[in-house]
Length: 602
Image 1 (cartoon, rainbow, N blue to C red):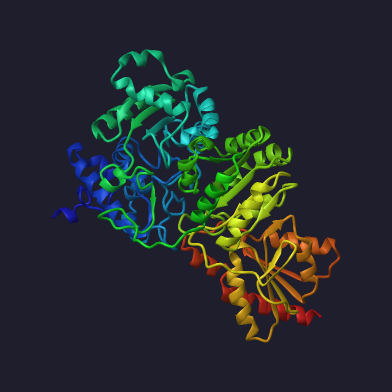
Image 2: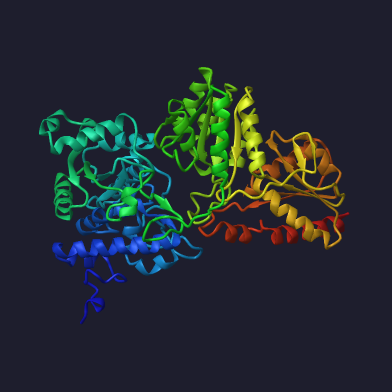
């Protein structure tokens, strides 16, 4: 039998299982770790995904699967972007050829993929709360011998939810919970704040043993504390985890790791250690040259330009300075940008305070993360009518990151907020103009949203009525309303509908909330109005227009197109827009069917 026929071989990739790993002698695990890193570089560079975080947890994940018995013991990975190694060790190596592709492996834990995946978490700071609930459930069901092992990074530990869970876990000394703190000093970028300083102090206990006598935040909260331990030393990791089991819980095991470990381009990347990559050259870790400008690039450039003219403009990020486009702003105005850690609630409430103090804060977050700060937007910003601007990147279909990262709920949530103005730029030119208008607005909160990806060619308006740009001459049969990035698809659909003899007007609202009265008037002058939005159809802007037309007794027939009321899986943006009918062919088909139904009803 050769090595590739032996399921216990350290170089066998397709049949790794937790049981096989536990049967291997410790000295062979170095070969397994090297092979895992090779596979990570090979597959993630080809498909895109989270590279740096997974390279940093190879030994840690191996140790966890050797000391604990998944899925009987629950391994819960906070955020989940470091779970690729866990997937490989639980029989999913072969699936990595289709990582993050439609129908293939998810880039995050997935309950439908494996019994070893307890949660599908990809929003940070949740694992400790899951662990608290799981431990309670196991005890209540007479399964108190099962361990719950949440793995949380120092970056995710900056989120308030993590401390709510620590407060509860530490208050019950009998819980069989071992919190593994994966401390690499970073989230996307280096971790900031008092907690980061505290963890740095704990990391120094290996040098200055006197610090051990001083206790730490975890022991003060009722945990036993073990560490710091080298997160790349398998023998030390296994020994420490066995010690943690002997304590009985709750315990914090402080493992110090290196993000991007073992791959020189990742270790040398100062920005984020190749945290998340698109398709890149595995030899260099670099993306192909000549990439088109993105929506984020346009926002970054224009915000920096406007801030040079307006000294009251400041910016906040929730540990995502570079991904949200604030890096150029920070380079130019370092004293005017605030990284609050993975704490969106705090970011928005702090922005309220900045606004009360006479500044105009810009909170740049991914659209999916706005969900976490809705109460602060509603009660702390809007209730006080404070001029705070939120810029929502990755709005709509984001693609391969899947259900938790599609920015498809913000329209619905924002439509509930009194006094809020929402801008939907359709191209780079309107993004620049609307950002300037938002920063000039002193009457309440403003929001801009735009999708992930390259910015399209500018779509100049043929005319304007109020806050509505007309991208074509006016017709009489169909009004196509393209919100934001959907305007281009509506223009193409208009040409297709013309071949069917329909006279079509394409409108693109600049400020979509509050609903422009001119849009209601336009809808009343057409036999059918069809709204198209890259967000949830339920409670979206199309719904708001239909309601406004009803309230105004305008007699308009409004058909709404948007994303369905479900959790959409991962796939490319184009694939998912096509599947939900939001590309030109789908829009054309829907309009023809709706127009025919309207004609029959008349």
